[in-house]
Image (cartoon, rainbow, N blue to C red; front, side, top):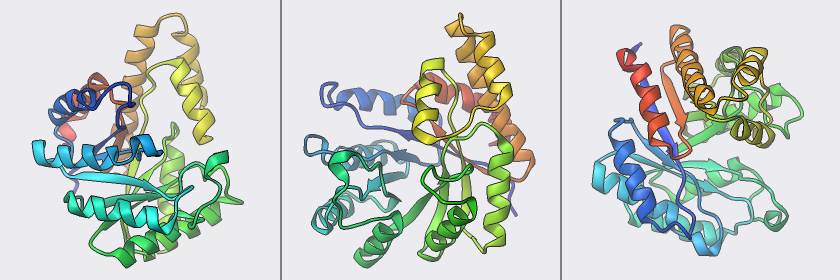
Amino acid sequence: MSNKMKFSLEIFPPKITDGIEKIYGCLAGMSKVLPDFISVTFSAGEAKAGLTTEVCEYTQNTYGIPAVAHLTCAGQTKESIATSLQKMKEAGIHSILALRGDLTAGKKVSDFLHATDLMEEINRFGDFTLYGACYPEGHVESHSFDQDVDVMKMKNDLGVKEFLSQLFFDNDDFLHMRDEAVKKGVTASLSAGIMPITSAKQIVRMVQLSGAKIPKKVSKLLSKYENDDGALYKAGLDYAVKQIRSLHKEGVNSFHLYTMNNINTAAYVRNGIEDLL
């Protein structure tokens, strides 16, 4: 087995008020980090429709970096999904991270209940490589961790090439998920999703959204630097680098960095693992 590390990045399209030029500047910086691919989160809503596809197309055509387009099915119809898939195909996008998406009040009506339903629809459409999400601490709506692993196996059998994990701060959670997935027969590669701690406010919000827990060592870090934003930012980046290096020693060779569109964050983490790439 090759020990070469894969390192990829996640970015999100700009707000309508920011203009598309803002993300182009971000991509110029991200391209210098030399990621194996860049994933682009899904732009929901009529006003933002197509931004994910546009950013993916620009990434591939301008920098030659493969792009993975997020696609969520919450609140969508078969017709809207077919339209999105056709636009992605025409733009030369070959890879999709298929997700259910958040079920907000306005998105409860959908022709698809689960990410696996969307994956089946993508497979029917054809010509796309599938990526899937996985949850080291279990999905917040799952009845059990075993159920989560069963869903991973379902996604695996639908053709998922690679799983990108939700953020986590305790490496043991990811390693446990990996080992249980292998026991269940999951053969797709698993990429550890790393979210650097860049501010206390940011981490609280992400934990609320994801259900991830904050281990004692992270709580101590937040307390130690609660009055020094600059020191917390550096300590958080160092923690992310240590997470990656420690997981690599345990045989994890693929990492997906949640950049929050921060070029400095991506560059710092990449420099911290330079010798492993």
